[in-house]
Image (cartoon, rainbow, N blue to C red):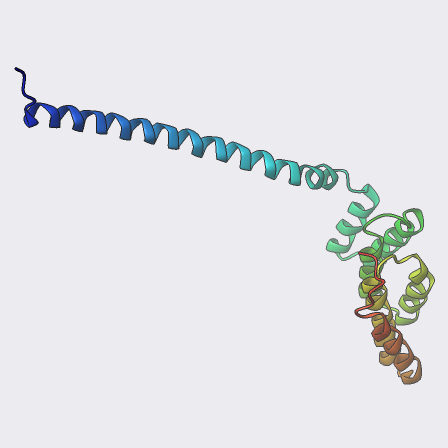
Length: 165
């Protein structure tokens, strides 16, 4: 009759336990690697459009930004305004228009530019920002009636449920 000795079984059991642990660790490391690759692919899917459009920025806008950084504000403004005239449907149109109004040294010219392009702005948030900027410029010029009128228009557009994102 053969009796199992606990001294024989225990080492075998411990050895099998160690082997299982090693295999579990290998499986876990494979899962981690696979999850890293999946995460990377998901990130690339979301970032690819941004990366592709970042390099394809309009050369006129790039040149205007460079001129502005170098201190040639009037030349930069001329390029920005040309770009606005050529690209009324561009996604950066509203931001560029608001930026031009910020760097324009003549408040009357900034007001005129913003008024001319208000109809081209697609979102109420940006229109409200433009109207607020016009109001601020009128206030700087001392024309408080016009400033108040534009502040009211800007306020009316805030939190509009019909705003297009």
